[in-house]
Image 1 (tube, rainbow over the protein chains, first blue to last red):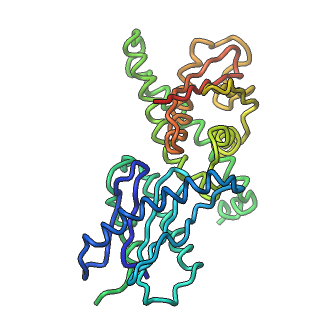
Image 2: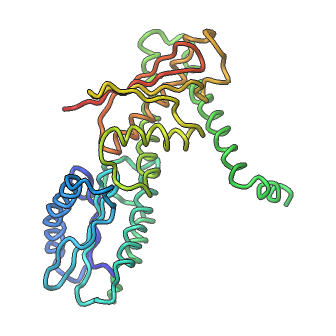
Length: 139
Length: 175
């Protein structure tokens, strides 16, 4: 279960950012912002290493004492960043991958919506619903 | 009941055939509609219709550029993206691959299709040569849109020497 989910455009501005409302949201925004540097580093590092082909899922970007930050880049250089609670150790890599896959599918659906202009903030209710299902249930 | 059974018999191939036909008809109507409003548009009017068509193709291309490469791993270089255009995008939209891709390695690519599906019903040879550009505007926009989502700014033009063969020229705009 994620604590914060963000979709960043290729020009590095947020298209969608949502966090669990209990905590100081600014802290999560800041974490997502700093994670962008790590994402860029991973993309350029993999490119130079002449690896067969870079995978879309970037894995754990960096851990902090309370949280872990995961990243995923699409072929259109749109980045998905997910912050999860460190105490929730039951979350396996596979589950994170499947969450990113769901995010990617929903983002593709948003892109295909003719009423959506690429580059705008995402305001789709379907997308909101999908993200809600991924975030921690806070009573 | 009977139609549902028929659909199951045709299976995926049947549905794909319907997609192609539907797209062809829709495209023909789009061109006809944009020209019908002003049967003799004059130089300025004609350009606007062409750019409207191209704009539509651009938006569709942007969405395609997001949906089609979903399972592919990241593209390593420009040529990979162009190859993806020639193979996967063309196959998805026109059920065939591009016949040839040439480049001067300095940002210009020429994509050649010997029998372009949107022109093939019209003529085989030089008849209707002046009408052909209208039917290529949407596809030029499609290419430009897909390239734009994949991070490449470009300018796409099309030329026809003899129907149904046509060439798309992609010039990469480097800032």
